[in-house]
Length: 64
Image 1 (cartoon, one colour):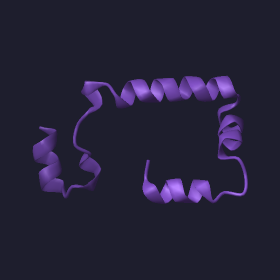
Image 2 (cartoon, rainbow, N blue to C red):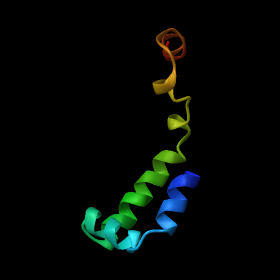
Image 3 (cartoon, rainbow, N blue to C red):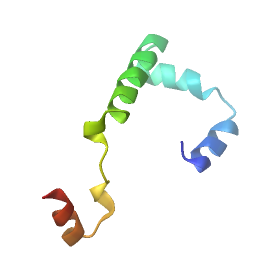
Image 4 (cartoon, rainbow, N blue to C red):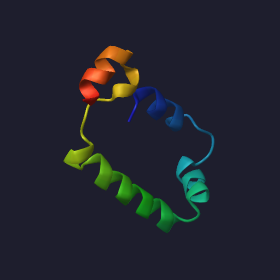
């Protein structure tokens, strides 16, 4: 997790986990979303350089 985000969450005056459950609809939905998120993050097919921050030429070379 981004260190700045971790710092801000630690300083929150509310429970961020509770807000997450509300946004996801339930604690079970949060658990399931995180499970799917981890499957994707750990899947080798999704492990590639992020082309969003490259200028057009390197992005095109990397995407070919």
